[in-house]
Image 1 (cartoon, helix red, strand yellow):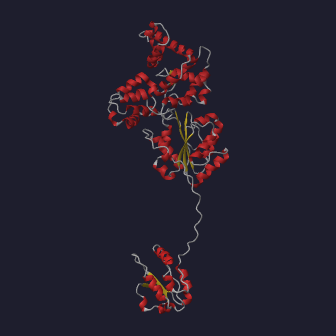
Image 2: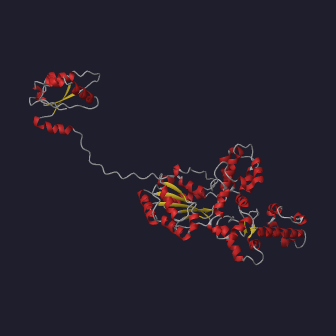
Image 3: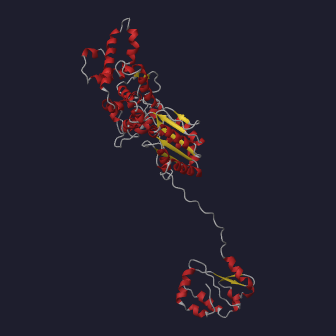
Length: 512
């Protein structure tokens, strides 16, 4: 506040100036500059002192007097804090030094990074019982920057393994929130691998393959990224060469650790990839833990528990989760077992939820049955319909005769159909020489895959012949047919159910 050469008395009587100066003094210091070359001997200085003392308010103010030490009179020290600035010629320099120092210019801030769709906000950490070894392998691959591939049949827990690996403490420490999941089960073409991954990184999903790949590379250049491409088989089936090529391109992006889940035979995107080729059913202890984690510990000693897990659900991860949810609140598992006996595959869906591969075994199986790989092999689908009625499975040597009358289907085509089911992981790989579906998959297929009428007739005729061979029990010819008949004993009840829809001679079926 600079005071001119006008009388200080005039300044004191200016009400508007007094108001503004008083208001300013509440929040900031005020510097008065105005004494003449006479310094504190200026005849108007007493008027300034009177004005300062006349501000009427409750705030305690402090005043600093910038002066040469030689000019400071004893009668002015009361209420003033003197500051000696030196010689009069140095006053301007002194005042400039009172101003805050100018900070050096800060480097320009980089543009804010788009908020990626971290898995922390999209997929909760799953309970993955009995999969510790598989999860550890995927986690170690991600940390090392190697791609990981998790393959298996429908509902076996591929997504669970991949997501659980993302929550591994070492993976979280390395990637932080730059861990994403891109669901590609509905991808119509391999380019969707790039587009879906770009979206998960909050990047535009438009453009050709090269521009999408460059955008992903730029995003990963800032800091490492761990990404899951979940259910990649649809896009791979649409164009296998293009799908494998794009996966290999993604696998070589610096700072991108990739995990891919897929049904059927795994694709290896890089020579050093960690490949889990076929997730096995959960062992009994792990299945029990998974069931009780959902249904509640009160079922730990239920007499129906182990039979339900072993004979009915057979370690199938999705089925265990769905059925366990239906047990909540029940007094025992007896009623649930009765429901299974009556409805079977129909109960394998989450109540109240929209059917999807994550909430329904039938929906999960349908993704495999409707895939291009199955559509290209009609005999494979017909074989699924046959296996749906064979709880004990089917000898691979019998496939040719059941899929066609003598000479209609070659051995090569029959083997091709069987191989297709193995590649799709629809039959158990642990059973050699025999094709068998896990019970939840088999019962779901029974609901949705109708038997080809000629196939049905051939299946029933085959068991009628086995029934006739059963008459050889306790004869010298029994050893010749014993093995074949005993191998089919687990199928008899199901075949009898199937036979109810076709008139047959009672005596023939009585032998079964």
